[in-house]
Length: 506
Ligand code: XMP
Image (cartoon, rainbow, N blue to C red; front, side, top):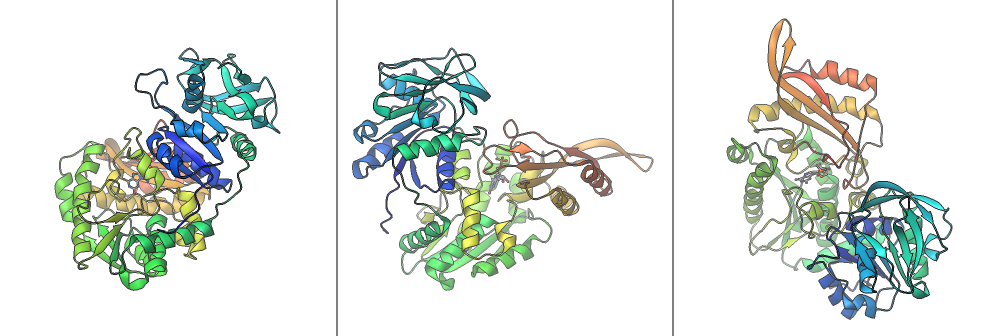
């Protein structure tokens, strides 16, 4: 294996939905980090000594019998430790403090500094931070001091002896904590960490890794959607293996948008690999017949997708490896990093039997993949492409999926997209879906047809998102254009945030 210098920051993952966001924030600040479960962290610490250790949040209570413990290696490493939320509570408990569930907090909170600490260097006396906790530290360990409290007086930040151990009850890694990055930066300064990440390094490392993971006589088949993830993966594989050993396969389940086949061909051509379309629409429609529950739909779609992909790969001949453009967020939301399953992704956890599978992008977030696309000189239409989910239009139809509904939704999407794109650049994704039938009036007659569902979200990583309120002119244009489509009599616009909603309609 290529010897990649080990990151100087270890993050012990106690299972919080925000754990991956810590790594992303650190990369944004120019630092690489390793995010590992407590057991893996213990193993890693046997070989490496980081300069800084961060203990993530988690969804358990440290007072539960089976609560995850801080591995001993963390203390043996002798380096500064920052505990975040659960991590802070676990630190407090380890050093003899107490944790109770008396002062839960959720959402934006204001905290006040009550004593000086290098962790809050350069920051004002009050801060807006993002809280998400049931428990708090109710008694400090001996020799520790309070650094900050929330409005109720509950402990919001603490510091141990010799300015070596720190804990914050809030999440500095999320953007809602307005000075969160500065707090992390202060911690890394205390630890003497040096910046060591950029997109160019990442590209070189990934190319080396792929070249080493794929044997000299093996070929790589990858599921190509034309989106930024699979196109970047295609370009990286091409750089690592050359054009003759990389094959793009696009499964078409009648779930693509208007003009999408041409766009996918253009993108894969730019990535320098060959592309084959495989029509799986009949198989998919057959297995989805009668299914209305979103998770059941995903579970029914997954084996068909997998079989078609494996069959298409096998048609390439012996010795192939499957490359998947799975990102860190796909793994989190599919529960692969130990958290709650929010939805089954079509392309995570696929069992290809004896066939080797590589997921080179699985530690990265969308914004990082876009940076990679730029450094691979892919066209802007790849770099700036708004994400489109692998199951495509299939997860944008509420209720049973039929061929007629797919065709109708494709038309709604074709008409709506150019109007939505007038909204401006900061919308990360527009989601056009097909709702249930509702009663309307068209001409002078009762019309019992569908609602068009429209949504836009602003987000950097899709873990959380802000729903968009469209300008009146856009809403008027959508209403007038979409209700002219036969089969549509209403337009529903959904500005709900994630959470409580998700981005897709499902
Ligand atoms: P949600 O709906 O979970 O979506 O907020 C977050 C992002 O993920 C995309 N998405 C998927 N992408 N397979 C994919 O490749 C899937 O099954 C899937 N489900 C959601 C979604 O479009 C958004 O960008």
